[in-house]
Image (tube, rainbow, N blue to C red):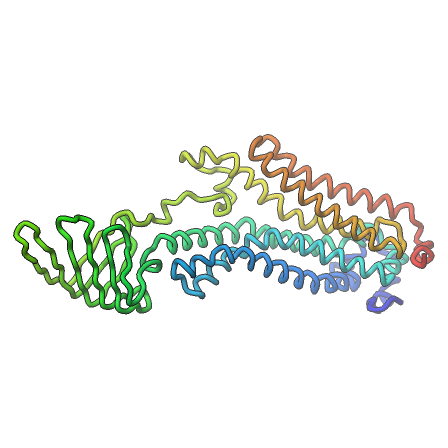
Amino acid sequence: MPPGFPSSFWRQRPAVVGTIPSLTRYNGVMTSITRYILLQTLGPFLFVTATLTGVVWLTQSLRFLDLIINKGLSVGGFLYLTLLLLPGFLTVVLPIAGFIAVLYVYFRLDSDSELVVMRSAGLGPAALMGPAVMMATGVAALTYLLSLYLMPLGFRTFKDMQFVVRNNYASVLIQEGTFSNLIDGVTVYVRERRGGGDLRGILVHDSRDPKRPVTMMAEHGALIMSSDGPRFVMANGNRQELEPNRRQLSLLYFENYVLDLGHLAQSPSNRWREASERYIHELFDPGDTLDDINQADKLRAEGHRRIVLPLYAIVLAMIAVTSIIAGPSSRRGQLYRATIAAVFAVVFEIVGLVLLPLVEMAPSLAILMYLHVVIVAAGCIYLMGRRLSRRPPSNQFAEAGT
């Protein structure tokens, strides 16, 4: 018996062989073989997913370091912003991680002759491919959740927060103990910044009207966003204005004073939503604004991609299994078959990437995105059935020794 192969298989073999080819289900419960392969696949899948996600997240998050360096964003806020991008990364990473895990596990099962034992027990193509497809189906379901809901939610929140950070000058330009120019003609000094945007010891010099410069001082205040733009709200202070004609200084004490900074920033609600921020119904029914009309084909192409992309997990897993099982049973050819699987997987992904811009230019070609998945999956099933149908079970052990 090959090392690591579940011994319970041999105790169940008489009952299982009688139910071939549906080995993966016995009285509604997964058999030990299916559980064994699934558990073997889980570890590599989690490891590859964590590794690829970490690499992609790190490389992508470096693009937003300017939010810390130039915009005054806290490290916690930066981490939260970049974590919002994870669902988008995972929609791409999960199918690839599933492929690598399946290819690794089936390659090892073949190297240890465990697949030979399964074939000798009478397992057909469906039974051998079943555990990989079951795992890939779970990955596809998770990818659908990410693609249809969590990814647009994350990107939408990220873009809104990024927009506010980059346009909210309270967190960008106002620094403790320095004179900062909010906009041309408005200079601000703040003695201390506290949590919640509270500013202490404020001095504001407004020279937007050169003939009537104004200086304001206040004990505390805050820079807030309103529907009409940013407002500097100050409390317990005074307003000093020099009247140029009489060369006199007028002084006004106030409890609350609001300084209009004009259209220093826009509201995130007025921002056009990109394709990555939209839910599936918003992609197929973009809207009637000028930008929506101009980008309608691109948005609908993204909608088709959201539907097709999770299916890549199943197809890639089938490519991995087919390359290992449907190829010649020879130890000398194992590495060759694994290489062929990797090449076919890369070609499959490249074709998918090429189809997206084609569909954007010609929406009628959207059917190709679905045919791309169906044809490759059907080809894997055909190769599995063809190879195993002409290989007698009695010759399995003899072939494994070559």
